Length: 211
Image (tube, rainbow, N blue to C red; front, side, top):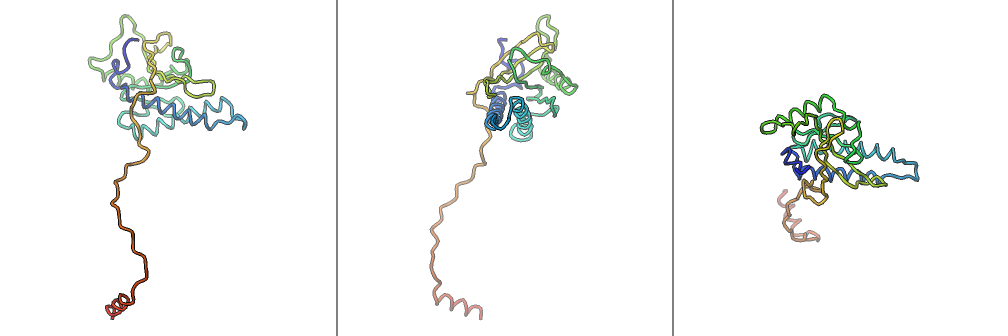
């Protein structure tokens, strides 16, 4: 657990992880703001809303500002995305106790994981005698009100029994930031327009030209 993510796989850069963490925090903050228990909203509804909005935000980022390195591998509720060539899923819960459901892999993730492994110089090799398959997951740890407490990248064995990395993604890292709107060129100052009635002389001249 001494290595940093980008030291294990170069696609997991500090800036990319920071972008994802800020995206997740922002989405969940908006969902919490929209939550209204007095109107019947429950924690179950908040969880569903936060999950769906996170899928939507990552999908939009993959098609827009982060398209050079972020990609959706498998859409839908089983949602798998890739940072560079590395496949990831996210879950809400404690980083060191990934739920079994979040460790399930479909064919799309298996294929993407092989691509990720082959993209490393010399390919990935097992650590010591550990021949287990390891997965990358993002854990979203929340406060009592559903807001984000920590966003953590974990590398966990497929059986959930071993954690090779727990890396909390700091809030303070400056990563990819989408500008609020495109920058506009400064316009040149124009003199104030003259306001008044046209002189009779000018009107007469115009009439003469028409004749």
